[in-house]
Length: 198
Ligand SMILES: Nc1nc2c(ncn2[C@@H]2O[C@H](COP(=O)(O)OP(=O)(O)OP(=O)(O)O)[C@@H](O)[C@H]2O)c(=O)[nH]1
Ligand SMILES: [Mg+2]
Image 1 (cartoon, rainbow, N blue to C red):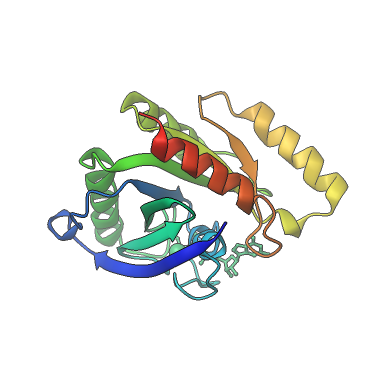
Image 2: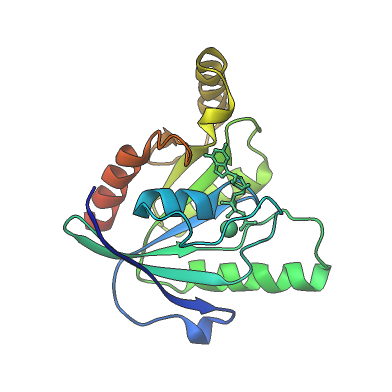
């Protein structure tokens, strides 16, 4: 994929700040530390565009990235991760409101990409989120992250387990690694299809 543009458009702490470009948007959702910001960087071939950290909870605002990839122009939206215990309840509720405010009131949203670490099992957080999206007619896909962390045999077995365990509808389940770029081309293909579906 030829990336012609990848830049931070704006970072928002409140829905009133969300940009009004009218461009199609693809959002990155998932547990803290699952690799959302890293996968976004891998997609746009920029190591440090979205800030990543080994400390969970790095992304606290909604970051909108303006991207031109091949013939597509879109916004990739990096959302704060959920499930991070080390913040106050008040702060956590604030993020939740921000994320829901985005997901509920965003006609530009064409697809939600839910990330899941290959080494962890799906929890209710993921299945409820996928159901919630389906109820609102937001197409979703699951990106399994950090495939480089397991050896090929184990990787294959884990993937099969995860696929089998997920019984909610989603467009695709794609194994990825931000480190080896496993699955990146396939993700772009899915994104392209989703932003052009009506
Ligand atoms: N080995 C490996 N490590 C990864 C991969 N993707 C992310 N990581 C590491 O996982 C940690 C978290 O990555 P982030 O991209 O910051 O995760 P995030 O989901 O954006 O986290 P929050 O912003 O806290 O929600 C970092 O230390 C990354 O280097 C991957 O594909 N392979
Ligand atoms: Mg992040």
